Image (cartoon, rainbow, N blue to C red; front, side):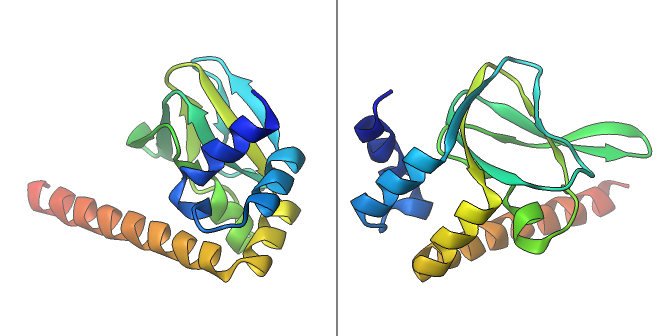
Length: 149
């Protein structure tokens, strides 16, 4: 995929929709495109986060390691952004992300990610929106689990 194609791909992701094309070129150029075969782990719960991932193609499961064993709590796919919590908060990864199908992802290093947030406050706002939606979904699922328990 060419640099221009990667920029067009980034423009379709809500997180980057309002960012100047020249900045997206820089992001695409400084990020690494990585292919993960089905079954491979993109990031593992408990590890220190050094990068976030944008799923370009394929699907992955978000898995929590629990006392009762691994539990899939969500699925992610094309244009989804994962792995940002660990690098935003300097905490260990909160979940494992494992490729369900072959996955191609754009890997954004922590320092590049923070540079983009600093330069583009609208990106930080979009990240807050995504995290708030995830929190709402998790809260609803926890309440539903309590009702069925």
